[in-house]
Image (cartoon, rainbow, N blue to C red; front, side):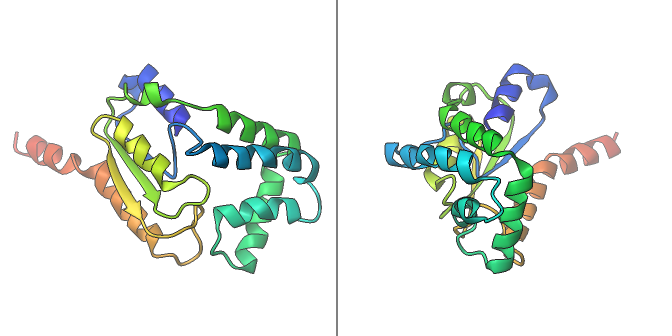
Length: 181
């Protein structure tokens, strides 16, 4: 999200629409949340690549608190192969420093912000803040506590429907205007 915002401000002619899911303009709703995530950095450096997923399980349970054993196992493995311990720790530190609130106010691209009310990774208030900062942005709220979608969750279909509707809403009018020429 923050990188897309920076890109849209720098190259507005290249971006027609933006859809964010579970994103933010700054990555700490409270000092306590920031402290919690930063306290995980040393743990990431020492245990991220370990054969036992105990270290990664902390993050898995935040990403998908309602997941089952199979989803946890898959997500734990995905985390292990997606980043080295050092890269994962550096990424977490970088996320904590991001703040694009000033840039978000400059975005002129139609934007849809989709966020889950109970998201444990990126609190809902940060999604709501992101939508309020981007002029004209719409906020679409989903139920649930998981940041990552689980198999069979109905909210995934709501997300897809809202996204498709947002991305195609101006096409119908443009297509009929072109056809009537």
